[in-house]
Structures are given as structure tokens and as C-alpha cells.
Image 1 (cartoon, rainbow, N blue to C red):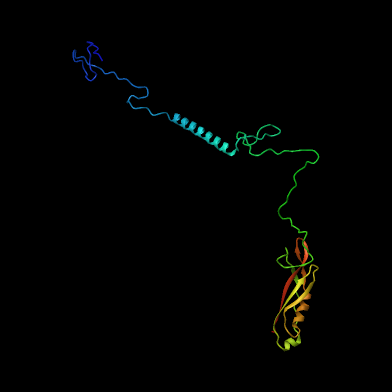
Image 2 (tube, rainbow, N blue to C red):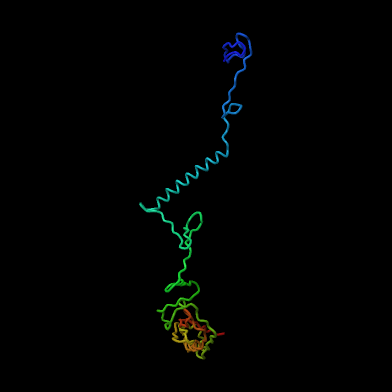
Length: 227
């Protein structure tokens, strides 16, 4: 730089001219990207957000294209189904439609799909023989006893002080009668016969299976005690 008074060359390191003694004022130049303090200004926050958003959108589009290409077989082209009425593709992400519209047809041979009912309807097996005797686990509703007469004591059993239990196996038939009575455990002096006679007098509601009255096995016990 030169002295503004004598135009003598002057060094910017000195605050005054060496020849005339004039005071020198250093020229300060500022860069447009620096502030008055000389530090670089921080970038705008909005610019950073926009930049990050653009990068994210570009990366998402790239990932979507790669995934879409992997799902398609080689040489296949993507086809978007189009509705018959409007020509608008369903499954379009803009329309937010994920299922094809219901199609209606008319004419001979067309009609609604058959309705399948699943629930409380009773299933009937055509191969089931409802005339046979069922166990209590096989029926849908067990037989219900209405009245059960008690057997009497015989004089011989009373004189001999016979006590115990008579066990009978029988069938509660679908017609409401007790049949096929078989003693499983007996007592002497006519007590078994008394138990069989009492079993024949039982009244009951027959068991049911799939809405049919059926016969079922039953076990009966009669206790004989002296008081």
C-alpha cells in the first residue's frame, strides 16, 4: 500500500508512514460468507431440513424400486387390474383401495354364492344307526329319571338279616321302557328279584342323539338295610 499523503510505499505492518509520519488506516475486507467477527455463518435450519427430506425421499424411492423388481419374475411386466365400470385401478396407493369392487352379473345361470352356515345347527350323520344302544358318552342328552320305586324286603332276607347292594345293568330304551336287565351283583333270599322288579317300574325321558330318541345303557344300584 502507498501513503495517502506522500505516496511513498508503506508497509501495512506499520501504523504510520516512515517518511512523512502520516497515520495509516488498514483496509479491512470482509468475505460474503463471513460475519463481521470473521467467523463462518451457520447454514439456515430450513435449508438443512429440506436437504434431509430430499435425501430421504430419494432413498425411499430407490428401495421401493429395488423391492418391486425382486418380486417380479425375469421379463415380467407389472399389470395393475382395472375395474370394469370406471377404469380406475384398485390397489392404487393414491386411491387407497386394496380390494377389487364387487361384480354383479345377470342372466341365465348367474346367481349368488351358496351360503354356508356354521354354528348351532345339529349335524346328522346319515350312516348312524339310531336303533342301536348307545353309551352315555355317545348321546347328546342323557336320559332323565322321573320316578324310581324302591324295592321291598323279603321275609326270608329279614329273618336272615341280609344287607348289601344289588347292582343291575339295564337299557333305557327309546320307547321309555327299561329292558335287558342283567344283575352284576346279587343278594340271596329274593332281594335280587325285588331289585329287578323295582327297576322295571322306573319312568324316564329317553336319551337323545342328533334330535332322535335313542336307547342307552344304565347301571342301577339298590341298597338293602335293616333298621
